[in-house]
Image 1 (cartoon, rainbow over the protein chains, first blue to last red):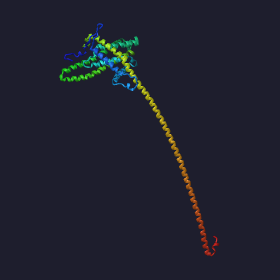
Image 2: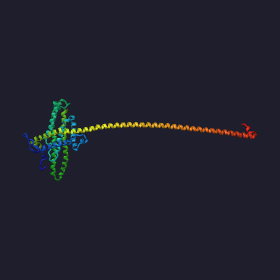
Image 3: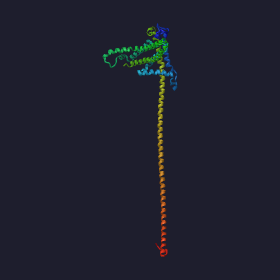
Image 4: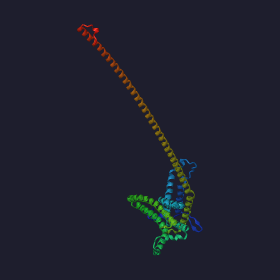
Length: 250
Length: 152
C-alpha cells in the first residue's frame, strides 16, 4: 500500500474487461475474477479426487487419496451440519447449503491472499446471497404449508391479547433475517481486512519498530482465517435453521 | 467506502455472482456431489460386507471351539474310564496274589507243625521205651530177675 492510500482502497472494484449486455454494464471485474477462481477451485477440489474410474471393487480403489480425504472432510462436515439441524429431510437441500458454505468459505479464504480481492466484503454480494436464501426459504414455506405458513408468526401457547404486540415483532424479525445475515458476513470481512491494512500502514510508518505491528498482523491473519471459517459456518448453519423453520414452522 | 460508493458496479457484481453461483450449484448438484456420495456409499458397502463376513467367520470359529471342547471332554472321560478300569483290575489281581501267598504260608505252617508234632511223638515214645528198658535193667539188677520177665 502506497503512503496516503486509504485502507479501504483494497475493496475497490476495478474492471478488467468492459462488457455491455442489453445496455447494462456487466464488466468482468476483479470481483468477478475472484468469483471465477473460487468457483473453479471448489469444483476442482471436490471433483478431481473422485474422477478416478474404479470399476473393480478392490480395496485399493476404495482407499482414499490425501486430497480425497480433504474433500470428504468438507462433504461430511456439511452432511452432519444438515443432519443436526434439519434431519433426514435436509438431504434435498444439501447441494444448496454445500454450495453456499464453500462459496463463502473459499471467497473469504482467497481474500486473505495479499493483493487479492474479497468479494464477500461487498454488501451487494452478501445481500444477494442472503436475499436468495430468504426468498428460497419463504417460497419453500409457502409450498410446504400454503397459507398456514403465516402461522409461523404466531407463537403457540401465547394469550390472545399478546398477539397484536408479538406478531409485528415476529414479522420484523423475519424480515430482518436477510439483513442480519448479509451484514454479519460483510461487516466481519470489511473490519478484518481494514484492520489488517491499517496495521500494515503502521509497519512502514514506524520504521524499525514496525516489527511490532508486523507481529500483530501475523497473529491477526490467523484470527482472520478463523473468522473466514466461522462466518461461512454461521451463514450455512443459519441457512439450515431457516430451512428447518420453513419445513416445520414451530 | 467503495462497497457503497461504486454503485455502477452493482449490476456487474450481481450478474457475475449469479453466473458463478449458478454454475457452482449446478456442477455440484449434478456432477460432484453424486460422485462423492456414490463413492462413500460404495466404500460403506464394502466395509459392511466385510463386517458381515467377519461375523460369519467369528461364528464359525466359535462353533469349532465348541466342537473341540466337546471332543476334548469326551477324550478325557474315556481316559478316566480306562484308568479306573486298570486300577480295579490291578487291585483284584493284587488281592488274589496276596490271598494265594497267605494260603501257601498257612499250608507250610501247618505242615511244619505236623512234622514237629510227629517228631515230638517219636521222641517221646523213644524216651518212653528207653526209660522202660533202663527201669527194667535197674529192677533186674536189684531183684536179679531176668529182665525180660519184668513187666512194667
